[in-house]
Length: 313
Image (cartoon, rainbow, N blue to C red):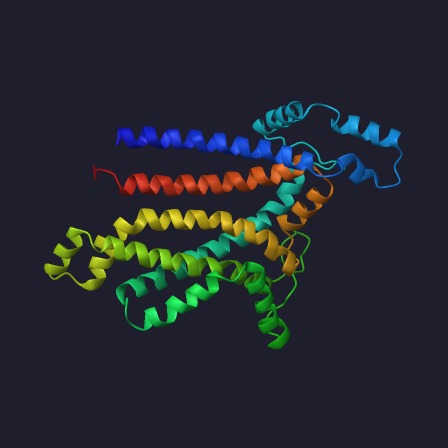
């Protein structure tokens, strides 16, 4: 177990290093885009003197590594700095990130429930109705991007049936005024991920079912449900947890697109505006928040894998 813990600590260190490298690459990519934050903020009619003064104010006349290091030192203390328009990045993240987190969390919970139930059903009945329905259905859904799913949901449930709202309205708290406004965005995110993960659950369960102890449990006359949940699922859990953790990143990425379709008040508009303004600090802050959340979930999945594999060597 000590060896596994040391390996896990090394994995944490490597992922932190990858996170820092990712943030540095964001600075480089935004810096390579045409124009800069000073020109975007001042507009096309700004004189060269005004642009130069704004560039100096924003620190754009300093070397890129120096700007990144100054920004990173602030992040280490919890300060993401200010945008090119003088707004607090911390305040913007506090206003928008919870909404996206809410959307992604509900979609993830729905994904887990659907994938586990359908995946276990398919694994228990690999040649029955489950296979005839889920195999082609999940393959089709996986091939459809989130924005297409979102558009189809709007066409069916908003425009044709008029059951659910197609746009999101917010109250003073910044959240949707009705829970109904969450249904279509959550569904657009969860449907593709549930389809992918139920196939992973089914495959992991079938692989784990070939273990000798599973055959022994079956020969001993244990009920099928007991064999499935107590002897197969624990061995399939590392693969399933890793798949779910990977879906978190996909959900956050898809959320930025789905939010635009439904006018949802999350990080999508914030990202679009920050890229338009060439606002490196804001883009990097969004990436940092999202990547840190994804990394934390991946570490949880790694911890589950270490726990599930304990004592097997």
